[in-house]
Length: 380
Ligand SMILES: Cc1cc2nc3c(=O)[nH]c(=O)nc-3n(C[C@H](O)[C@H](O)[C@H](O)COP(=O)(O)OP(=O)(O)OC[C@H]3O[C@@H](n4cnc5c(N)ncnc54)[C@H](O)[C@@H]3O)c2cc1C
Image (cartoon, rainbow, N blue to C red; front, side, top):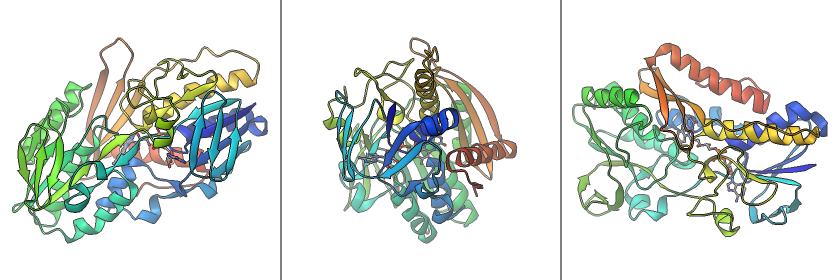
């Protein structure tokens, strides 16, 4: 049974690891990605804020050596979900089971003025480049702004505002600076009222201006003003943006998307096409776009494929649960344990920021790199 997994991010890495662990050399798995290696989303913030270096957070796909799994570095150029056939710049790949885990592509150029006058911190290149920009920054008006919905890791803009506050205080620049956070959400973490109220209180204590239910539509490059969707304006010296997200063009061209993302059965992650699954950010499954959700969805698909390989049937269903860690600065991290289930109001449990949870988060990162890449790693 040939399993073809497109995308070696959170979803693809977890899926192929699970298949290899269960099926060993009997797994005929091919994993395709265009990149040289994997970088955790949270590592982007670590590099940007000078807590570690770029080379310390890049995990090369060369280190992937799992029984039964072949890694192909290639650009995926076309996906035929009917025939489960994929064209890449390294040749054609055919599959009995196809899993699309291609994530969300980021488009800074879709927001007028963002590339010219601002910075984005969501791509690896953008976040890594910001390290020097932040080193040189001498204080002023900082706007952290979201430019469209949906966007990955909804807590990340709040974390960025808090880490920016910490950085400016450490460098003695906080007094001459202002920080504003512009977000489309009504609360910082909508499924957890407790996390949201702690965050709002922390923003107030640290003098971070919180602007809910607003979006940045453009940057006026001459006046250095962020123009909001409701017509409001915010002058800035440093703009840190969350760029527009879209499904990768090759996925949009495949005909699999409805309203921009791949619809899936929320319990099985099956698409409308027989033996084609989709997991993670590329789907409209109903969870936020975050690695922890992609990973757990991949686990459900792995269970189904493993059962089938063993001639059994799987009753595993996706439960919508994820644990999100939240950087508060000062090496303290909070935790939200949240479950999204179709037809239910999402419920989240919150644990206050602490040094112990910072350790938990480090273990989270280390354990993934250990399982996926078979190597030791420490987060910073
Ligand atoms: C600043 C920031 C902080 C974050 N913090 C967290 C966090 O703390 N916890 C958390 O759970 N999530 C976090 N996230 C979100 C997380 O990174 C993503 O939600 C997660 O990576 C999604 O997993 P995925 O498998 O769906 O897609 P991805 O991990 O994005 O993987 C998709 C893969 O597909 C490949 N690909 C795409 N198109 C092609 C193509 N045409 N050809 C070949 N390959 C292709 C890409 O190279 C990529 O490797 C954060 C994100 C950001 C930006």
